[in-house]
Image (cartoon, rainbow, N blue to C red):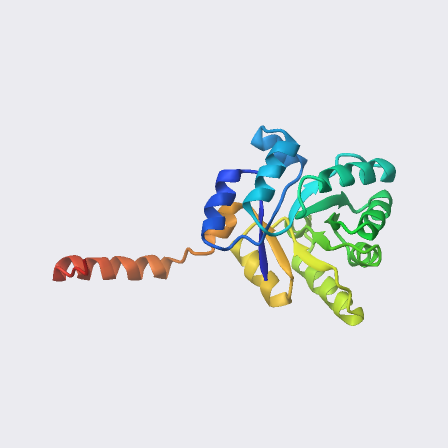
Length: 217
């Protein structure tokens, strides 16, 4: 499973990238706003930092303008994935941009029917939002499983990019279901390393090292 980082914070991306766990990056207008930087400037910097896809979202809502914005975003770097919303106009834009050879991430997916349409429109990635479904007492992970079944039934090449990841358990659950990609905030990815028994075991080892005067260097 590929790990994308859901942020526009270049320092956080760089830290994770040094560990070799970054396969791509996703951004959106809210994350760009939080970074306080120009969308084209920060997106270019991120593209130069990572080799994998970097999702950059359009700001328009009509197909013609989305296509124009998508073409401009795609000029930033070869690894740009143009991010469009899962609306009828978004699917139109997806179809055109895909035909022109660009990667397209169709976002804000909340149903299997939407995911099926995105695959038919040629999306490179479909982004189902797990956490937001959980917020309204629906099962976000069930949606991932449904999409996986449908895509496997017909050998669709669209990759399932699980988004709105809130916890480390979301990540492992998505891996069990067969999501192709997860995108999560840096803090959630970093939390995967934590376990109380690891901390307890390390404390015991350190105590024995100190008591035994053990030294390697």
